[in-house]
Amino acid sequence: MKEAAQMVRSLEQFIGGRFQAPASGQYLVNLAPATGKPLSQVPRGGGEDVNAAVSAAQEAFDGPWRQWSVEQRAALLDRIADSLQQRADDLAALESADTGKPLALAAKIDIPRAVANFRFFATAVRQFGSDCFPMEGALNYTHRSALGPVALISPWNLPLYLLSWKVAPALAMGNTVVAKPSEMTPMTADALASVFEAADAPPGIFNLIHGLGGEAGQALVEHPDIKAVSFTGGTATGSRVAATAAPQFKKLSLELGGKNPTLVFADCDFEATVNGAVRAAFTNQGQICLCGSRLLVEASLYPRFVEAFVAKVKQLKLGDPEHPETQLGALISAEHREKVESYLALARQEGGEILCGGQRPTLPEPWDQGFFLQPTVIAGLSPSCRTATEEIFGPVVSLHPFETEEEALAIANGVPYGLSASLWTGDVTRAHRLSQALECGLVWVNTWLLRDLRVPFGGVKASGVGREGGRYSLEFFSESKNVCIQWNPNPASPKASS
Ligand code: NAP
Image (cartoon, rainbow, N blue to C red):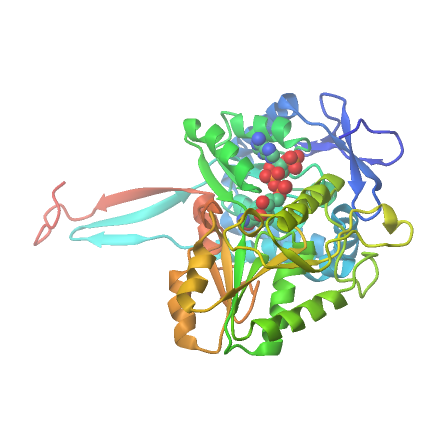
């Protein structure tokens, strides 16, 4: 990342309710992926900024915020949701410019979901109960208390969507937060800080530190006063975060990478399946952890399916993210596009045949300097080769025929990851059988990315540890304590003595 020039909007850290310059005085340049031009200057935060933010979070936690009732906290989340809703158009434009994703996608998915996250957790915490275990002459109940200052680290692919998914439950349970978004997509996190400022939220309950992961992020995870780390990002980074946090016994939630299978059986609804598989592979340029990047198709259907699938992919409209018909925008950065392209070269070496895409598109100014890549479909790869088992996180899907359900399952489970799977079949018994056998945290049957915010969300194997969503998030962001009260010392038939 280059040192910044003086020509674009400069962002600041948000610490203790105040926007302020980074202690280093240094800024990074944030580029707009669709044009390659500078969009903003981002503070290069480090240990000093992190110390200040954690102190502010601790002070806020020890202050009046601790006395806020559930209803007061829920009402604050509702006000934040209202304010985000009022700014929805601006936020969608910021998110699209910052990520390179189509404006229509940001307006339909990213921003409404960020609003919904605050709204949902406001309701969820109002309705959150606790366990009660009656004994003979005694009663146990579970008391849940806030943890203290918590670290929220989020990636660049769904910036406000994923940040708000952590901020809302953390505050709902009475914690204070220090958030570290990706330095490549800081714009909507900055806007969220303005929303907190305008909402008269208690200073220090929401702090925002911009900077590089290895500097600001690392310092935040290492900080001894941080009680929990909720991290969403790549598996290699997640492993480093875990190694840093574990010796201090911090609570840890890790939402990591995926290499998700889409399983297509010959008895599927053909049209719906082709459309669903295209959506699963290429939404957000394939840069969603849940994208179906391995397409497993029953051999008897394979030729017909491949023809229809490739035809649909070729019709996808790529380019100007602001155009209402655009379906594919730019990748996040030049470096990321190069990484994705290196997998295309690898795929060729591994015997793959590129059925469509594989090239940078020719686009008019200013998009000709953007980080675009055509949606790419590869056939002929072994399901166990590197291209078919490593996370590429771009607009690339590999096709694999299978003969039997057992073979499909072996391919689906034959990767280190285990985040999600999408299964397309008309046989409900098969759907149940396979759903239980697939090694992953989420299975969609005859759909993809249909989300209910109450359900457990997370992965197994290298895709993560822990679950978010609904009560799972509220439990993560709190500590449970059992309270046992004996109300009758001489019950008729004592059950437990120790
Ligand atoms: P990443 O490189 O792992 O970064 C994620 C976040 O961690 C960023 O804010 C990053 O900051 C920060 N970070 C980097 N090194 C750190 C360290 N040593 N300590 C603390 N924080 C550190 O991931 P990404 O490239 O942004 O995102 C793509 C990945 O996220 C993919 O693997 C994708 O599958 C995964 N993802 C998973 C889910 C899920 O729910 N399972 C959802 C979305 C994305 P910088 O950006 O400044 O380096």
